[in-house]
Length: 470
Image 1 (cartoon, rainbow, N blue to C red):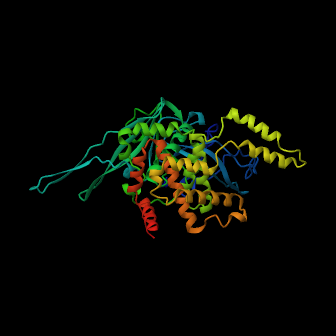
Image 2: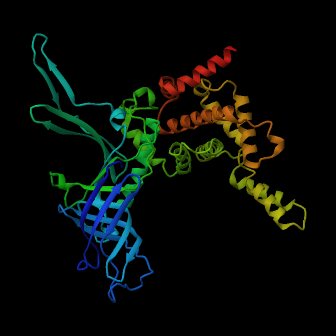
Image 3: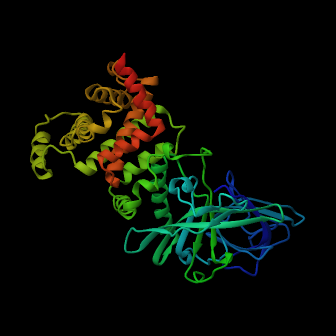
């Protein structure tokens, strides 16, 4: 959210409307939400002093009305500063995690919405659909540009929620100089009945990740608007409740084209609902995989060693959750486990014995080497385009993981570092993306085509080809 604003108004706690305090609300992308009051919400006992003056307030909600009549709700608030003098002049400051402009919510349980609309960076390029068209007669001096809103695109992801891609337009006029129409695309989440803001936040999280995978860049909400049951029939600007919260936004590329992205709406348009359902239905199963992958994508400053280890962990988690990867059934291994534990000789070091028992507990699970071999075999037609030798790649990955996990000096010579570690990490990223795209619904041939047209991955394939020629 890059929009910045400042409101002067009157502010109060939900249970003390009669005690209103003047102040200024500021929201900036870097600092978040700060409310500076000329006064205090604390109860005064004597002039210049306050009751429990050393205790900072933590009101869940602060309500306000701006000087232009806007209703404002601040949520998850806490006091950050309070100053007062013997003359009786007080100042206090609060930080709020969330702002709702256009409504008063008396308590968290009231924060329910019928729909939420979000605009993301590069969403227009990802959708790549326009309502503009030109009319021009060859022998005429007349140029006509028309705009017609494209039909919304929708996908029902559950019995409760439907996702829409909406097309909006705004008209800008500079008298006798310029007129322009600007299209902006929003994602709208609509529920069968009002749902809590927290439930919508969970869906927003998964939509953000879905778009980030497709766009191949971190995306953040640039604008969020909510509609409640009470105002859903209103057609004017005040129908929407604007929502803001602080985000650590990375600087995004100014322009992206189709060949910078991993996939676009066009690639899934004929099965848009299927892909969206797949993404949401597998969210619980693949939650740790999503968290690890997008944790890397949204933290480009992460140390290379940590990126490598996070990708390994994500790949192991993916294989375990999708393919299980066990030598024996759980019931069969229970007997083997008991026998192995009983075979441990009596030793005085109890901690050592417990350590052996813990290792045996996971002895039925596939090793990293075996998991990588199975994934590589399943997607070899794709991965062969980036990886020179399967066996060499897997050995380097396993040796490097073992060294970075245990820092055993005997493994140091086998592990890779520097530029070689960067190259290995990029290949692991492609391997994991291949797995995610497959679970999303893409065929192996389509995944291969997506990588072949992507400019970043074209460079990697070119490097591999040059290496093979040497």
